[in-house]
Image 1 (spheres, rainbow, N blue to C red):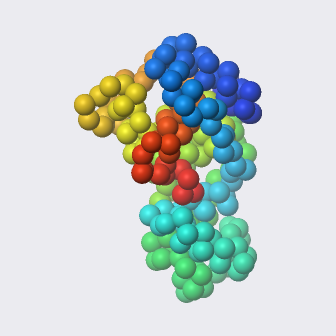
Image 2: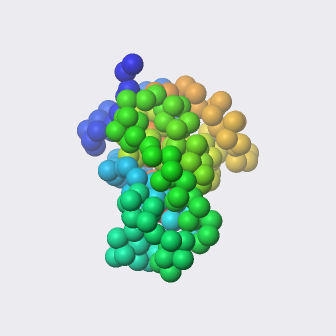
Length: 212
């Protein structure tokens, strides 16, 4: 199986050029926003735990809680196993977030193995964890595994930018957006990055992925 990734800015620029060839409406977007930052991260347990901690919180609140967990050395599976719920609560984790993090520990994901799995298999593996939805799994595919064909159709910023790009009268549903953009494959990660950058430049809405 040939898994396509975007490893660096040069490869992203090649992907953008190929995307524009099949969807010319991206040309003015690219001209306006330039080449987006890839925002790659190392992935693994710590990355997913941090994403869980940041759910439904402001950037500042999420950063504050995460710093407390780091300072308390509570960001590894072993540390979470040994910590009581009260200890985690003291560092800022709600009862719900504690349940999420413990579910992540219990699933004992082989993160190295994810690198060789097809996108949908990665999504199935990650969403088996309580507290991880498809959007979070897609963010992991795009930013941690560097996959080249991920369009976050549930993301509000993506839907707002796509509505304008495609000339739609209203924001598309995830299914509508998926159907309308099938021909962007296999360059949909480049499309996601361009649409996020466009939203950042033109709207008050802040891309959700910046929170994680």
